[in-house]
Image 1 (cartoon, rainbow, N blue to C red):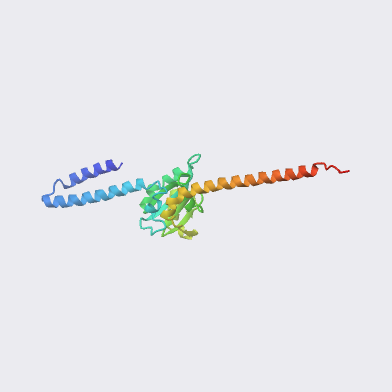
Image 2: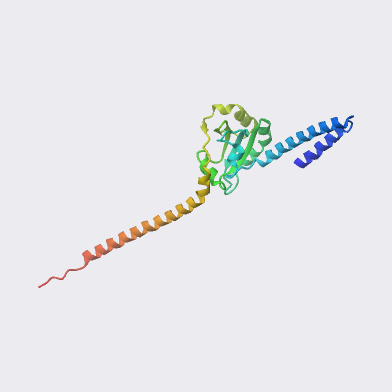
Length: 220
């Protein structure tokens, strides 16, 4: 789609400036047209690339908790296991209308992004969350065009907002695999110790019971 758009724009530019009298004027106007073409192409590319967010670049793209200079975002949190929810298709259909109101739509599969699942665990799933001015608002209505756009541009202010949770520090992200490994080992060790303690207790109780039942011989 982007390539076709570039070809069409190039043809328009060529036809538009083919009759310019002065080469310098034509060159200047052509450069401006090329710059405009590059900007539009970048925006189109961004609107497609930003539709799926993940652990590694969610905050970099949205800046939800760190300034939000990239704009307003509406994100669908969902789980694709065992299958994608029906709301995903309805949400995808809102991409272009929302973009016309300068709202970027994206989605996050929390079943494959454990860091975002933990960070936004209070949101639930599936859920559409609007990120605006470092606050987040959960959408409770239907995913019809008019209903969603009215809420995302105006009515969201009446919804209870919450501060966007901060992303985990880089050191924690680096050590997360080690923490998970250690937690698993510690959990297994605790389980073994508890099982051993129960077994020893049962054996001791049985030994004591057998000792009391053993007959005592009287001495004459």
